[in-house]
Length: 302
Image 1 (cartoon, one colour):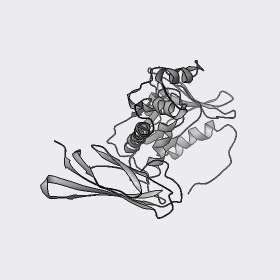
Image 2 (cartoon, rainbow, N blue to C red; image 1 turned 135 degrees about the vertical axis):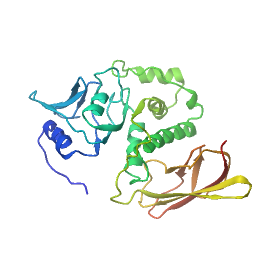
Image 3 (cartoon, one colour; image 1 turned 180 degrees about the horizontal axis):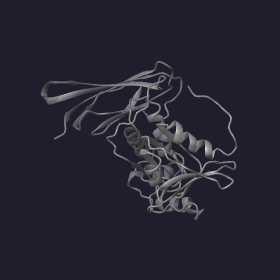
């Protein structure tokens, strides 16, 4: 269980010690960052993490350096950090995290975060699924949820592209991009901003999962049964464990790619079937015990 504790205003040394001595499996950060540093204090003075020649280290407010030597395999989730995923050369922070920080998988923004939905969407799938989804799968579904919302709420937007991202030096950039692209809302331009600007590093087949220590927001089960004529019937059953809307739509990977999909009606949810996954979007109010069932048949893709 989580514990609330107090600490010194400058947490640089403590964070490095945690990485070096206790060797966590997961490290999560937010706040200000660039390709060269992570600024620990977002709204107050604190130290920094920096790197040099592939060596990750902490630098406290007095200028004292603490090298990170944490070789145990881990995953790093800088879900709210600008530019942490941008590898612009050998001195990039991401390389140091993977070299002396022991990171085997990570994701990060290659531009300034700004809108943030792609990065924030990974953790609800990864932590919220309580071991059902790997980090790579959680990253995939965060992107697919973004695409589903963009296509559903803003028809035609999937064909639009942003090719300028210097928001820090150009304060009028978002407004100008919205005018150029004919964008109708902040959410639309934000989804477009996030769509292609978060990178995933590491072998996606390497299975990083959290241990189940509590009930996830929803329980999900996908079943498949063979039918006559070479078709397979898939059923995704979802049950809510909470009295609130899901942070991200429940989803499941299919065992193989499919084609020729025929969807059966669903009373209290809409669902999207792609060639390798199904994603369910609840309708109405979610209360504890709420259940939905998405069913469809398909052929195995050639």
